[in-house]
Image (cartoon, rainbow, N blue to C red):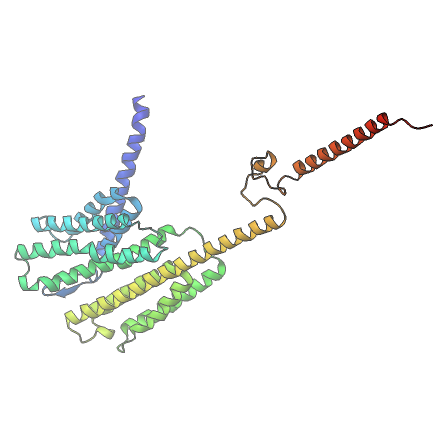
Length: 373
């Protein structure tokens, strides 16, 4: 009996351990990718996009609050790969774990849906998940640098802004991609595959040109994002936005294309302004289009149901979904159309009574008046 009872608990513990390890490895891998491109502001090194924050928020939304130990473990792996364990590092570990958890709690509080099929879900992810929750990690991280004299007090705000925007970009760009990849269930038709391949080829040719050309051509990516949002909704637009942001970050860190001959602060401002507006456009536009598609399908279903009801009523049949036993056993409304058999029986009974009465009167008349001879 003890073995039978202990087996489910052991299985749950094993699943939890595997999930924690998977989340930690995903966080660590995203961190190593983010550290491949860095910018320096006021002597502090930061990443224009910090993907681990987006990975952490997505894991919490998909797995629940039980994913937080994996996030903390992954953050510890990333920090230990860069420096030794010190008090300031522990503070960063707490901040990097608390920010995604805070984002998760706020999003669940407002009824956030992982499929992002409503405009309100996109707005919640932007303002609560990306812009509000990440204030926690940036404030804790930069505040500890100032308190431990690792950063001058006058450099607090530039470094804080760079840290905050990097975390926010991670949530804004990475989280929707992971959520939409998790919700994809139906394979595309052949015609849709052809269009998707065409979109990928155009993105592969257009985005490097726009981000590496000395002429400012960054605006060319917006028609591509609109096409992706119209035809493929969130999956197409956010994948294009992710690819574009990566290419723009590469160009910014290499000081080429539209980022050439700019100061470090100017590079940061231009890059983050472009990434932010592009990601917002892709996310909110696709959310609006997806919501309209769902609304249209709901209206079409309602119209189809109404047509079926009218067809049944015209034919004198009960509308679909109405129990027929109410009509058969007389529990429904006593309408003449609903009870033709009962009405016919009543008329037949009345006619029979009238015929019997008339015959009886004739018989009595014959008995009272004898025929004259």
